[in-house]
Image (cartoon, rainbow, N blue to C red; front, side):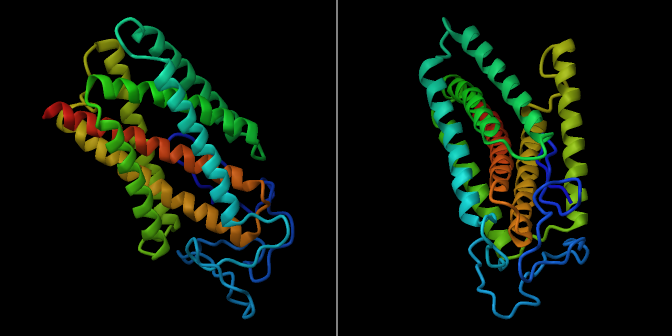
Length: 295
């Protein structure tokens, strides 16, 4: 099964012939080749046939002992920290160098839109690559950071200086909450869960596109999905969808480790987690902006 986030489909950690990374022999105790880890609706247990394996429960379910060159939780954490750190550095640079005052507003917004388009293209390129390309992922993070920096600066300037920090804290709380729920197995990623999330995400994105078209050609706020009561409702839905995609990301990482994915695949995990967190942050920022504007 492929994992995805609300904006882009991307290759998951799969054992089929269409994807690199799982052609080598599986780790001791890992599910047999061709096995479907979602068939029973639960995560695979890599220790079912290996009574001597040392269990590592730092992420969630026990993981099989890592073979040389295989992806580990430490690899995922390190690459994700690098990618998110690049986003933060890009945002900080944009905040400092691209002011959103009246004299520079058009220029700053133009650069932000350009950066967002470049990040989008880089994301598409990486999504169609058979293997993760660290340079593409880091470049995506840098341009995404520029976009977020300008948008965040504008919100801080015109809506409220505390909204951005609230959005950051809110995103961190969502991440921590979903991670805890996944680790405690309160959330179980099954095929039904995956199908429901994907269907909801496609419907959500379709409504947002329709709203944008109405706003562009009809003026105003389109169908009203980005302001008022409907804006608050869709903001909450967007955050919930982001949380669901975090669970899919965690499942992807867990399966990758259980199957013995190559270490380079940790860049793909970092890429997916970063995109999902950016999605949650933007939805959180929009929701808090609406709430602040209603005060």
